[in-house]
Image (cartoon, rainbow, N blue to C red; front, side):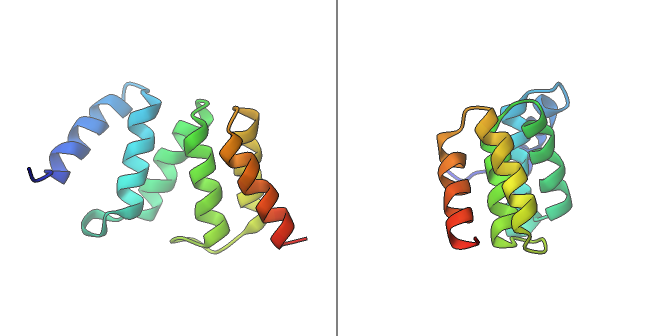
Length: 106
């Protein structure tokens, strides 16, 4: 079964516009990773909205984006800020990522 990316985006947008953080997160991932509709600015916007609502996976993903320079200028300070937010939101994965970031960049 083929995935209709535009239809998926349409449904996620409907939910995201109603403040549903998992939909905002998924939109961010789609805009970050899907070459045919890739848009880093939209990805950062949707991930940021989800992260500010307490969706720790979004904050962690933003940390990874900035740590690795995925479509943005690599910035470990900003990455650490996003990881810290995700840790405050209860993400063990973000805690691990923050520790690795500090270990590799003392």
